[in-house]
Amino acid sequence: MDIELGRGKRARRAYGFDEVALVPGKVTINPDEIDISLQIGEVEIPIPILAAAMDGVVDPHFAQEMGHLGGVAVLNLDGINCRYEDTAAVYEEIAEAPRERINTLLQELYRQPVKDQLISRRIEQIKEAGVICGVSTSPAEAEHRLPIVTEAGANLYFVQGTVLTARHISRSYRQLDFSHLAAAATIPVVVGNCVEYYTALELMATGVDGILVGVGPGAACTTRGVLGIGVPQVTATADVAAARNDHRRTGGKPVTVITDGGMRVGGDVTKALASGADGVMIGSVFASAQEAPGRGHHWGMATPDPNLPRGTRIKVGTRATLKELLVGPARVDDGSQNLVGAIKSAMGVCGARTIAEFQETEMVVAPAILTEGKLFQQAQQVGMAR
Image 1 (cartoon, rainbow, N blue to C red):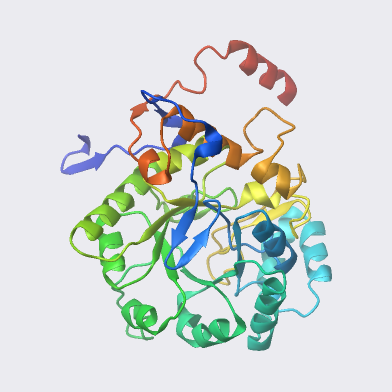
Image 2: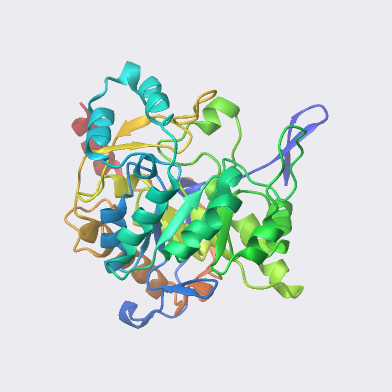
């Protein structure tokens, strides 16, 4: 139901993770007997979790470790790993920069040009560990870099912008043709980001293999504040998932839907999957891993933008090993660790053997889900904050 904002202006209610809850199923299943694998094109990933293509999260070493644990860490080809031979000093400078200077520093550091030979070298480094390699590029460089990443051995190709559409109008430059890119690629192509049904349907019709869902929900992203644009992730995921289902029903090829950003704990991940996602992409949680290159810091892909930065550096600290974050055992009770365990347990309680079945889980609007009956937890949190 639309809500009237004023005369002649109505709006649709949208929902985020904290406003909904999952309803348990009529049967329960042993979590050890549940399949949570993720399929993107011809590539099968053991767990449905990807690490976001952000420099504070992913470098070749992190990608290797993530791959060994069953996930995929996506390397940002427009980041410092493909601009600098030796990145240690660059990461150190970013971590130690005072808050008032960080955006200017990032703009300076990202002026160094990306080097094609470094792209190849980083991919080869990741592949040395025998893991799946995913890489992300800006749309402007997608056609140029496709043969480079393919020859180097990448398995997945992500094309990411703040918002991507199948149709784009410009007199000053040529638009990326997603149909041509998908046809030319011999590896799966995933594009994003997108939060709207009809836009997703048009992107899927170009032949891409996956869609990233999310505009501005990430912890380090300021797009929603700077531009006022975004849709809460539960609604955005459900809308794009509906486009995927309709696309498939009308004879289109399978397209993977990946919720990108806004998830802090296991409950957020399970709600994204139940909303219709096939997998999730996470940034800030993994930025806090001991293996992350950002030294306890995290910044968005659009933070170094020379004209209108839409991100900031945030301090996430170093909380756990990547293994503890992904597969446990958890040392804390806030849901930030053992994300795989959370997925399997939730699916078991909801009676879902596969993620496709989990997408049929009943959901309820529940704005009090995190506060109902939690008086002593809230009091303790207030005390800790003081």
